[in-house]
Image (tube, rainbow, N blue to C red; front, side, top):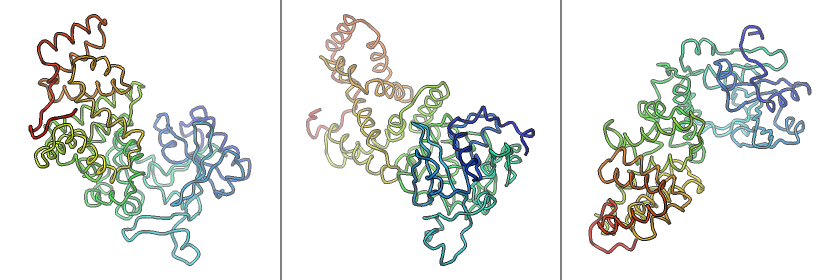
Length: 430
């Protein structure tokens, strides 16, 4: 498609991406924008990232850019760093032809998953190696044309997610492609084609072979991109939710269960915040996903182990986080705030003495309070009163706060605070 036949303008491309494209082009190399950024520009959307592809090798790219670092073992990539903005540059990928010369460049697991992929080729071969037809379109900085190698424009017009090549083979090469199919379908309001979707439930367990660190980033793209609710429904439909959150899966089978309602409400709130330009934290998202598995595990410790409620809860936190880390590697900068949010759910119920004032000063109070509001919407009961009390307590004067605490102390409610008590096997030291 020559320039006059498409809607992509350089005004919509980031300055840093243009710098990279022009420097490669001026050095005599081919330089293209590729993938999601081209797709989004054609759809009239604003891309979050701009990916570049070229016939220059990673080493040649590094020689051109002082601000370049080479990353990746599975496939070598160049990252051109402009402060916080990173432009990813890849060399055209080629086909896997078994020969002595390529054994050290390409390797697959017994299940067909690509473990190493440093095979370079032509732009035509690179296009065939792309995952979806809508991602195999290339914008050429030399003449501003767009080349559509796999009928991606037709897929866009038909609102359909189509794989390039045999679906089972492509999913086995990289199981994350199943998650990407769901993400694109939700983000672009498209349908996954029958051919591409039919085999996903059968192959969903392959997600277990994906490194947990990689899944952390992929799950954030799925659930923290402004389309969380529709993505969540598709993950369940294609049986991809269980390998991501195996502890939660048994609790959400019924659509009207409180666990399922809680996840949906959390994702609705997350979508609303993201789509209105507000920030969210992965700690809140993961804390919500694991809250009911945490409560269930805590009850098990109380009943089966005879622990008091406080000790059972803390043991359960360690258990649930450990099991989840085996599937998705949650960094400490998020797992530690998750612990705070969870533990403060019990502390918010203790509204006597100086505790309410101390809680207001806690750096994670707002997140814990929002979490309490979410729980009260789903569970109701005493949590509604507790949430309303904290809502009022934040906004009134110091004198009114003092009276609110005194009133509770006289009534004896502050010490109960709606907390569920465990067996009286041992006295709580909380």
